[in-house]
Image 1 (cartoon, one colour):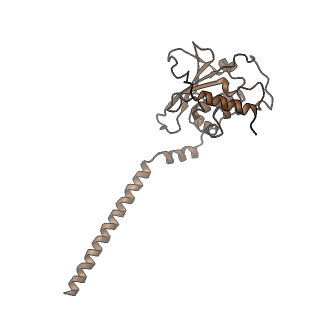
Image 2 (cartoon, one colour):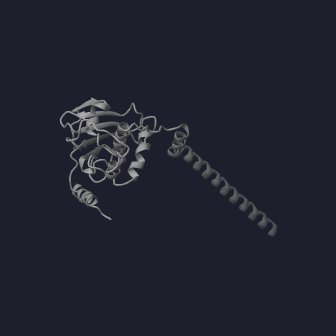
Image 3 (cartoon, one colour):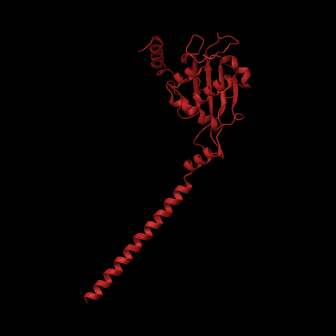
Length: 229
């Protein structure tokens, strides 16, 4: 059953389809590096349900942890815009498809339009439930430096990863790190050199078998012809 809130979200999404991304062309030199506790007032109302809704479903949220596992906590840095007090830039979200020796990092910009929030809030076990204190998807604007990061409907997984990183730090949630088996499995999947080498060896073996079969057939035909005469 569709609720008034659901209909409002649908109307908002339709509106965003034709709105340009206001964060796409922000100045590159108008940022101040900030620690997490210096920007916490902007994101006190961020909930897991808000992140899920902003990503238009569960899929992008499920990708958040794998993206964050590729970036150490030391590599993620936060900056605050000098020009816009509600805009934050997050650097250090690593592409899952980049080589581990020189991974590609994406820059995510987030704007939280919730200036009326209290300086401090008391969290309870039901903090993540839908209530009047939680951020709405209308309160968030985002941009990412990846190929699909400028869209205004839904968002890329890097933005969701940045939002989840904020949420995890707010609520003391530990993001699991990659273990040795996970790294080995990933390298085996993404590194095609050994696969291509096996393909070449297999092709050479097949070619040798075909040549051998042709040679055997020619010898057999020669013997048959010799016996005939």
